Length: 363
Image (tube, rainbow, N blue to C red; front, side, top):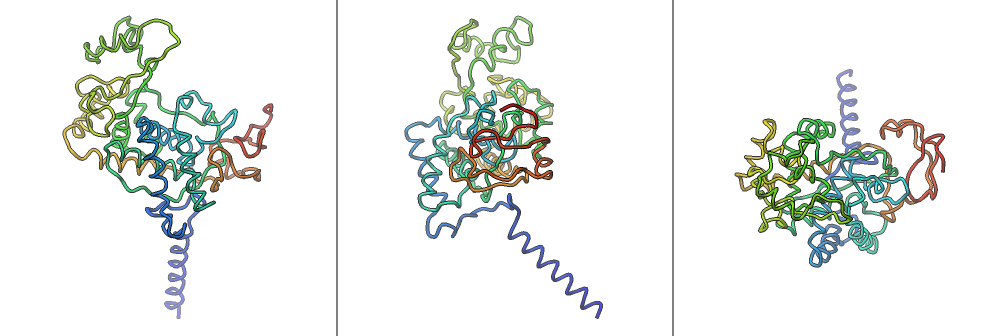
């Protein structure tokens, strides 16, 4: 009898585990094809892809814009579309995000899916799907994305702590490790720079006064430094020009491994890009990627892993990607711990709009 009871208990436990895995939490388990059958016969991913393709045909720079948006969203409080929320103190207002573009593409994709399948598809998933589509249109592989995310309820500029372009390899490895990403993941995700651009202000010190030496960065190819000085003059102007991060003109708009070949030739633009080709912890990884033909596959795998970053906080399916749906109850103490913030007491301003303010702060 005891054996039967134990067997029954084990069976119930296993059933419970299965049900738990199926129901999931608010940010439950992600899966490929999450929306299959949830919008009748409509293919959600195809709808998003159509919007992105229409925009890409007019402006291919939407691809690096969306890549950057996904990284800036996922690397802060997980892939919760918190970067999309408007507000005077939302993530959009943080200095690293002031130049983020592509919000209108996400708005268009959201409108398209809402028209066919209202209240089902999250903005967080749309960012991930749209980025995948843009990568594919730029010559990269069409990797399979996992979906099933909820949209976050909190967006604070103070949460934004992104690795700067001048970060050291050691510090960059540590920052990625805090998110559960490996050294290889880091090097592969930096490969998004294969279609990226940078403003002169982000690397101008490398051209004129590297580490206050009064000289250019000795790790940069002198011929490249000379060419860049004509684009990025050493004088105060209101113009902050841009250059391609992949210095191969035949490949700067294509997702491939050319970026790695360029940094091996000391033709990296950003300091961190050049350093991963020189540092003993990363140079072998860079060399392997440059010498193989599977970058698109491996980059897609790294993007999927980036897309799994979640914070476990409550979420919703927003009606508009720019605002939470309604005024909500205040976060619980567990929510505060999950978000890494304490002392939140009330919604500020328009309860649909943006953020939460700290106790004692002014309106």
